[in-house]
Image 1 (tube, rainbow, N blue to C red):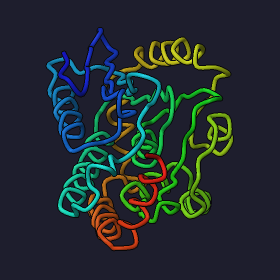
Image 2: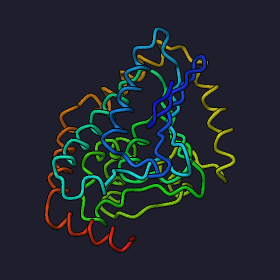
Image 3: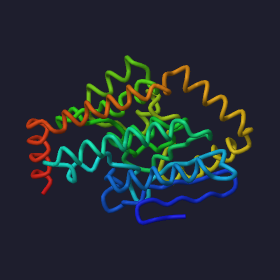
Image 4: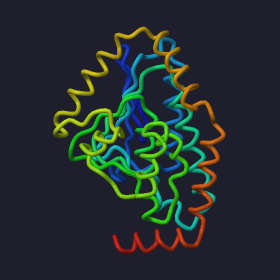
Length: 253
């Protein structure tokens, strides 16, 4: 099943959900987030839910993060986008199947946050991952809870406050990625192998294990994720953030 912004296929126990804005490096617009939420609802309501969900991006990028051009000078749109991103991460985290992020290319900001929500993150050595929000004058608070849960508080501070991006190999070295394969050509076979292995697990065992893990690491705390979205939106609306983004886009023109 597909629409213009996402595609969803379910083949037995394995589902594959792809972001489909390749011309915009799969940047998260309001419409794309709404489409992803609809797809997640489809998966969750399937008569026989898959055991594995692979999340990836069509084209050369996994997800370039928030579509900041679309929300420049429109704080209302930014607030809506960040609230939708918070909703999506919360919905994804509570899915009962194993989630595998196949990070085929750049996973930046909110895109890297989506990967952090997944149970497994596979990428390749040339991919770029990270959270450069502070470099742009914006705030990564909306994804911060998931980064802390993936990396631990100390390393999350280094990554979120330090900004910038890292290679797939470096991401695997610090635990941001589960595994980095040498090249992009090696990624799909590695993802298929992992998905096949996970698909043989008992669905009830996966669901209950994930439910307990979510309770243990605080993933059930919706309030902190929604508060992060509010903080990110408030910073995005400031004159400093707006000015920095205008300068960045002008430099790229």
